Each structure stands twice: as C-alpha cells, then as structure tokens.
Image (cartoon, rainbow, N blue to C red; front, side, top):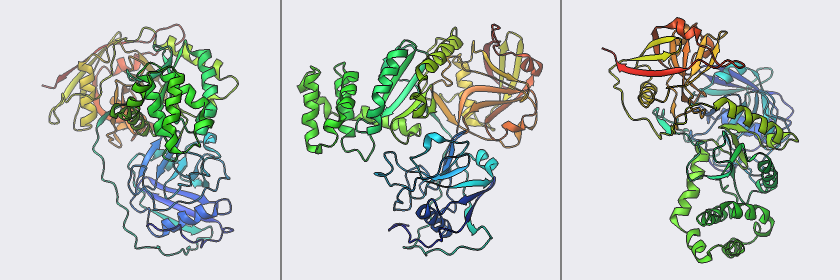
Length: 540
C-alpha cells in the first residue's frame, strides 16, 4: 500500500472481532483497541481493504507461534510503513501480536502487517512485541495451520455484529502477491555444527548451545558475562557455538563481526569476542569512521599481526564467513539477538538466566550423554540426498530387528522427495543399529531412526502431506516439526488420526505388523530394541 500509517478511525472504547478465514476453519480474535489503538486500527484498515486476502502463513513453530500477513511470503514484506510499539499485554495462549525486526522496540518500530498467534503462553516474548488481542475461538485451527496455508480473508465486526468503517486506501492498492507454492526439497540443517564453527567448551560434548549474537547489541553484551560464567561451570559436558547475526539497526555490527573473524584467522576468535563485548560501551557510540582504528587497537592489544588483521578485516573470505552465519540464522528463523538454541531447540534467553541454570544444564547434559552412549559414531552429515529413486517405481523396504522383520512398500507417488531421502539413507547404512526411541500404545506407533542423536543426517526435507491417510494401521511416515521431515521413521500399528496431516507418509507395512507392535524403547536399565539393518530394493 505504501505511504504513512492510516489515520485513526476506530473507537478505542469499542470491542472489535476479527475472523481469520482459512480452509481449516475460522480463527476468531477479540482485538484490544484500548491497549493498542494504533495497532488495532492498522490491522482493521489492512483487513478491510483486502490486504491480507490470499496471503499465507509463512512461519509455523509447533508449540510456539504461527505467523502470516507478509505479501512476499518470506518474512521480509509489509505494507510500506511502520506502526510504533504499544507494548502492554502479555503473551497468553492464543495472543495475537505484531511481528517486527529484532532490537529494542523503542528504536525498532518495524511492525507493519505481519502478525503471529501464540500456541501456549509465551512469557519470553513479553515486553518486546505489541500484543493487540486474543483468540476466543479456533485455537484448534491455529494448531492445525501449516506453512503455506492461505488466509482467505479477515472479516472485521464489532461485538454486536455491526460492520466497521475504515479509511480508504491511501494509494491504489496493488493486489498483494500470493507466493507460489515452493517445490519440496531437501536442504542442509542450519543448526548442525560445522567444522569451522567457533566452539567454546568440549568440542565432543553431546550437548550443544548455539548462540546468534551481535557485538553492538546491548542485550548481548549484558548476557555475555552470564554465558561466560555458565560455560566456566559446564564446559566439560557442553559446547557453545557462537554465530554472527548483525542487526541492520547497528552500524558497527558487521565491522566488529569481521574483526572477530579476522582474529580467528590468527587463533584468537574468543579473545576478540570477549574484548568486543567487554568494551562495547567504549566503541558502540563512536562515529562509524573511527571503528577501524578502534579495532586495530584491539588487535594490537591481543598481540595479533596487525597488518594481516587489517587485510583480513576487508577480505571477501571474512565477509563471506560472516554472511554464512547470517544465512544459517535466517534459515533457523532467528529474529533478534541474543538468540539461543539448545540441541536444535529454540530456548528463551530467560532459561539461561535462572539461579539453577548451571545445575539444570549439567543434569540435562549428563542424561543426554548417557542416552547417546553406544550410538553410531559414523559422521552422517550429508548436505542433500542423492537422487536414487524413480517416481514411476515402487520399492520394498525390509527392516531387520532383533524381534523379526518388518516389510513395507514405499511409494514415491505419495512423497517423492521424502521416499528418495529414505532410500538414500538406507543405502548409506544410516538406520543400521538405530534404537527404537518410542513405542506409544496410546497413539499406536513406534519411532526410530536417530542413530547419532542429532535428529537428522545433515539435511531435512519439506513435508509432503497425504490428508486422511492415517486412518488405517501400518502407515510408514517420517517424523518432523510440521514444516520439515527428519530422517526418523514412524511405523503405526493402530489408526492414528491425531497424527493425520502432520507428517510425510512414504509407504505401507505389508508384513510384520506384530513385530512393529512388539518393539520396545529403553526403559530403566532395559535397553531399547535395535534396528539391525534397513534394506530397500525395487519392487519386482
């Protein structure tokens, strides 16, 4: 739409309802115009003028949020203007709030059209985003939303059902493009640890924290001594990976990230990392033109080869190294700094700031080390699977276990990308020796296929859904997070409608269903049943 934010035309004392129409049902939200009048006014303005019609939910984080309202469909679009923050309400279950760029809300008023709805209470988001309403009906629809689901339209009424008048568009509205469905592919997992990542602590530790940071970010500098103290306590069982995520509002974030990488080339990444955070108050507010001289002085203090440091500081290789971290952060949906992951799971900053964090983390790390002891030591880190199947063929997969064989027919017509990935991994011996992770009689399914405890073989594939197919037993599917499939296999032995529409189905068990039901996960001192091997052959 462009231009300035719309003029205030709503009555802040009025009660407004927004009905978000989707193919999976309606989501009804009560908007709180008293707490966030400008935000509610803007949301109503965009909805009434058809801005949201045909857009998609481009981000889905199970147990966290769904997010939509971006005309570009990739998290970077908006209406062409920003709305100032109105931060008053908490992130209760079903809260609707405006997404924005990272950074302090008062200095980053970047809310425009993108909104998110929480799945469960998310107090870690409080005081950073404008909550402007709460879901009153359709939270089951919220939980059913998947990436790519379409916002058909958003209807606005008052609580008594009256229509709502709004300002006309300030410029001729260009129909917001509906992103074309993206082809399903397999991509490298952004949160896997790379050979050249910067690691503090035990490089072989079973537990990994990945921190995305910005050296000019005040919150990062404030958190730095806390993380340093924590790692001093748990560094024998935990490894910390630091990755750059310079925020656009920080003019010296990129030069300082490059300085850390230039120091890394002389073996002093962590020394420069610590110095930049500890001295942030000294350099952060200086003119940009002075930062190179400051960084040179830091290099001298660290006894680096200063001439080499200056060359590396502006080199293409160092710039590319920083950009690689940024790309991995974007792929992992990092939206600000500091942003933390624990073994691939997005963890709120507050979880690392509790009095018992060190004890809790050590206990977790000890349990994890015990859980993965004896698992495969093979280094499975494929960037992508090779193409090894044909779409016009079917395949027979024989899963050999200590309790007998399970035979399934794999059908590329159901999920060509995910069937190919499974066959490729079987050919590589990925599943051999993998323990049964779960046998849930209430659901009627088993889960296995995590031989390295990484949860993936280095890549994840997009989900290829077959709705309604979970209504019979013997389904073979790939476990995932709703957006992507891992390499972990699900075998059902009962109808599992609660799993329907969530995972990529790749085939059907044709014999050995009683073996599936009998397989056991580890319990107490009893070891889990193991998958001896998985053999896949073309069906004759």
